Each structure stands twice: as C-alpha cells, then as structure tokens.
Image 1: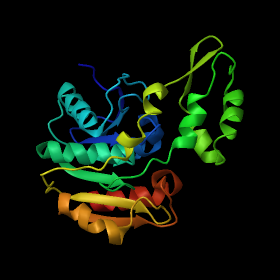
Image 2: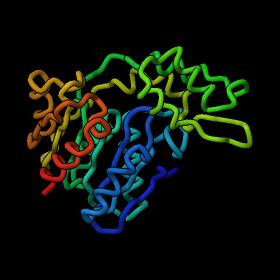
Image 3: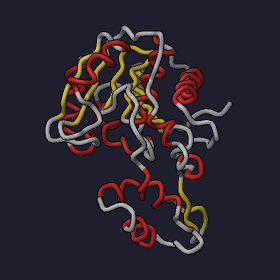
Length: 257
C-alpha cells in the first residue's frame, strides 16, 4: 500500500500531524509548523491522497483517508499523536479519531463540523478542470484563466500553488482534478459513527465563517466528541489559520498547554 507524502519539521517524540483542506497541501502550513517545532513538537505536514505529492487514487472518501493516516503513522513508527485538520482535513481527522481513538492524544478541528455540507466548490473545480496545459504555458496564463471562474484573488493564489513544472515549459497540477471534480458529495459527506472520541478535542471556527454554527452544531459535535471545546477566532473566515495566524497559534498553544 502507498504511504502519504509529508514534510517533517522538527525532531521530537511529541508528534503533531497536520491535515490540509480540499485542494490544499501540507506546505500551506509551513509557517505554523516552524512555530510548533520551536515549541518542541515534531510536525508532520501531510499531503492527503489526490493532493500535493501524495499518490492518486479513484477511491476518495473519509474512511479511506482515515486509513491512509493510520498507515502513515505505522510507517513512521508513531504510536500516538496530536492531529489537527482544517476543513476536509478536519473531517479526515474526525473520522480517524472515531475509528482509532487510541492513536490520538488530542484532536484539533479547524472550521468544519461533522455534518453534511452541500456541494459548493463547483466554480473552482470548473476553473481547474478546464486548464489546458497544451495552451497554458505560464503561471500568469493560468491565473488569467482562473479569473474567469473565481473572483477572489486570495483563493486564486491559493489554488495556483498546485501548479508545478512537469518538464521544461510544461505545467501540470499536483491535484488529481479528474477525480476531485466528481468528489463534491464525498467532500461534503457527514461523519457518522457508533463511537465517541473521549479525548480532549478543540473545534476552532472563524467568527465570519459559515462552516460552523456553534449553537446549531454543538449537540452533534458533543455527541461524537463529548470533551470538545468550541472556540471562535475573531475577525477570521474559513481560512482562520491564514487570516489570523497569531490568534490561531496563541489560542491553540494555550489549549494544548
């Protein structure tokens, strides 16, 4: 079986696993990883399947992604870890915690709840899946193409990080867009289990994000994660770790300690 790709920052027996969101990669978290490494953690910036430098597969749901993480920990000889997941990565982290509760010391979920989310990435996926790398031979040309689909400049910059040079003058995407463009239901799927994860859990949400409603979602969160705290990051949206990095880092470190 294939093992997920990662960048490991720091050397310690306190392992901290980071799982990125949809269309992201572990490298999106490099700045935070350096800060956590300075606090004595060994930080694993993991690329999930069909993302970053990890393997591509037709199979794509939270059950298989949780098993990917289990194999990754076995491969690296990690018995227990703290796991942090953002958005899609948060759902992978929740699924993993409910399937393998003995492997986690603590769980951190950033701006996602266990509930179902209706498909909402259609424009982004349309933009990425219509990139023609026969004609698109520069990052600027790719950026101009995406502008026709995605109005937000920050979102376009985030997506353009998936571009890489396959060979001289030939661009490609690190994401497996052929699979991901049909994965809307898999991404939005709710996390369901007969189990509850009893270890300390932190749900962080962006004050201006609509992904978590602390009043409406609290009961569902506590059903699966009875020892969960739900905290807001002020003046942040869905990309809370990037929009308010200092507040995100300080809130998390205070909770971890």
